[in-house]
Image (tube, rainbow, N blue to C red; front, side):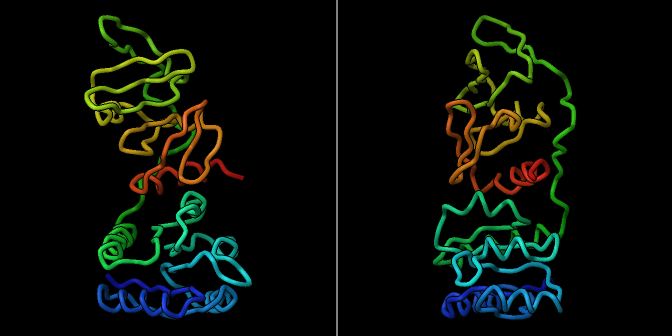
Length: 236
């Protein structure tokens, strides 16, 4: 696939590695190698690329600071040795988040993710869309209960059943999380293989985790991009 990109990183060895991986694994056009954020800004004012490989810890301007100054809708693949920035990185138009040292296996997975991103549009999850219905009847044990969707905080998959959690109770449902996901729309979204959350109930995000009531829920890499796209629609 013919894509254009640049590398922005203050570490020459890291730049050389990403360049080597690009040359060996893709047909992409590497337009430039920039060793600080100001050099990258100067290049991007005069040139367009499909996306950039962007380091986070750099002098003068960090990768996060640079991301706020980039042209609108610039696509980013962050490269860093620090995992704690992962959730924050998806406040931008982030395609992937590569942890250093970048292995060939991980880079090839990123290549597939990047090219798929440009081949088809990312699914939209409208934050104001109405759910299919306002309640469900839930069979838990021998009891069938009516549960209002707005009261559900999250669903947690546990082996052969799913735990439905509201602010008042927890119900065990003997179904697969995937089956439940297919019946849900906004404001519910999958954030992990084991969790579907009501994003209107979350109180904060921190270090790849979100918090709902007193529950700390991980956001996995697999679902992070679509989750952050939903959050960004309601972010000032």
